[in-house]
Length: 451
Image (tube, rainbow, N blue to C red; front, side, top):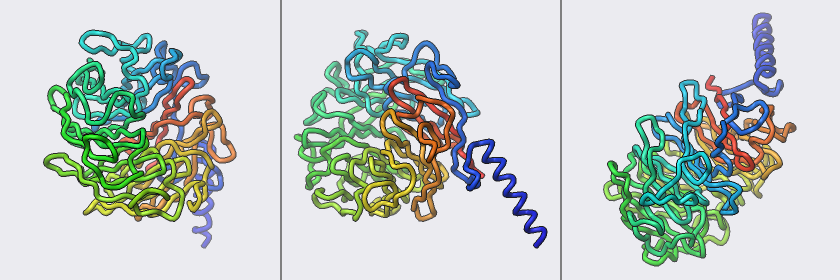
């Protein structure tokens, strides 16, 4: 008993010391998945690594990594045309210790290489960009007027841009029912093999998923069909109110399922994907009240959802929205999804953690943690850690950020996370990147504890 007591005392001392070093509350021992602040890249922020004279992070809207994890691409859609912030896509090289360094950018921002069509500069070509994906040696950005493609060098730097679909060029001259600027915040995803891209475009009481087959050498895309709701020229899903607002589109790791996340009134539609042709067939949906023909959960967790993430094992799909993070259990054989629970402040959800809007969601590579960026605009910002059980259930495990010291461990900087943006949890499972957007933009790096 004496030896056991000494062991407990020693462990408590270590926990307390660790709390002082990394900022964990002394009442809780650090555990797998907890985050430790490393550094922030920003412009003119005391204590941050200065990004340099060109800052392409202002109004950052999306970020992605290629499969090898060597590069982070960040796209910023600008301020919509007033001229105070120009759109750009930037390249950050990732070092062995996970630190990032800016190596270049393209777009309308002064100091970046210009985007062009047929050698004609189009500074605003990335305006309102809302998503970015990688496929092979190419990078693709979706905007309300285009899917813009970029070629890369062997080191990941952007070499040139080319036209895929917009009013300025004709690789894909037209998509059925879809005119430039007729929809907003179009979402883009790519299959793991880079062969197929899918564009979810919605607005004006209509929406569809467009299948674009990619040429692995040139990066050009060929239109291969579409399916949706009330979109002229596209196959119909046969239900209403599920694909008429912006959101996200996610492909499972096995490539057999695609899921459309729609913001209003809040729904997730499941499509089965033919592994040979890439074509889609609607297979069901889960949605909030007022969504026709969907399974309706007993909580309000799906209202306003905007982003989704699937575990590597494929057994869970998580979607984030203003009221929290919702867990949808996924059958790995069929891809079918079923509501499993939610955490946040929406009615009926497990009420725990800060009561702020969830912006983005990511799942760690080992499947033990879910991370969400959270916080109302300009008030506070944080990354919230939700611990994941073997069944996929989530429990609140703390948060780290700025402006909410009563809840979250502070990072010690100001003005870099208080307008939350995208969150990335790369395959290394030892790092998490969180983007802050407007007014200056920033990337904050965290180490993820793995033992």
